[in-house]
Amino acid sequence: MSTKILAVDTATENCSVALLVGDEVISRCEYAPREHTTKILPMVDTVLAEGGLKLNQLDALAFGRGPGSFTGVRIGIGIAQGLAFGADLPMLGVSTLAAMAQGTYRTHQAEQVLTAIDARMGEVYWGQYQRKANGDWQVIGGEQVIQPESLVSQFEATDSGLWLTAGTGWESYAEPLAQLKVKMEKGTVLYPDSQDMVHLAKYAFARGEAIEAEQASPVYLRDTVTWKKLPGRE
Image (tube, rainbow, N blue to C red; front, side, top):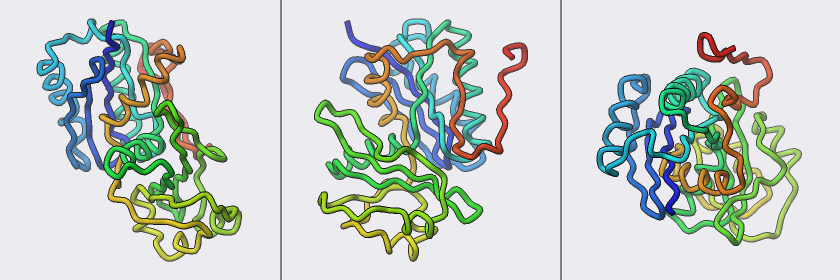
């Protein structure tokens, strides 16, 4: 029986939705800053209609859990929770950084990816990823929010071959990040995409990591940000 997962993401300037049915992926993605609330639900309707499915026929609902824009992450998880509550679906949170690593593999066949999202305030959201034999990804050293200069000073030199870059942080902080002691090549992926999130979500679902909708929470990486659940769900 094929796994059916819907993924939604509004954590960055991108707005995207994807439906996984077995090995087939139906997706929509649009660069739409400040238009997420008007774009995301029509995209959901479109991919479900194209897949011939209703929400309550799915196995799980995945969402971009961050890191990313505080407002964007909140919008995405709020919409995802609303859909999941309405259809009584479990949820799967997917890292936006890991999604960009998968996107870089999809577009460049890269198996080692350095991801950096511009976090403002002189910092980047950072993750170093290696692709595993089964197609899933392993993060090295954990995800973090960090100043590029601090990252360069603590980054350990490696002889593990070529790493491709992904994310907006490489453009915003090109000069300091170029000092990393590793063989790098510029990739073309700037934002996470739900078609890559559903790929990661199927591994999480198989591992039994689906949670109840009321347990879904964002990952900001900055400890100073607070999160409120939907009204009545505290």
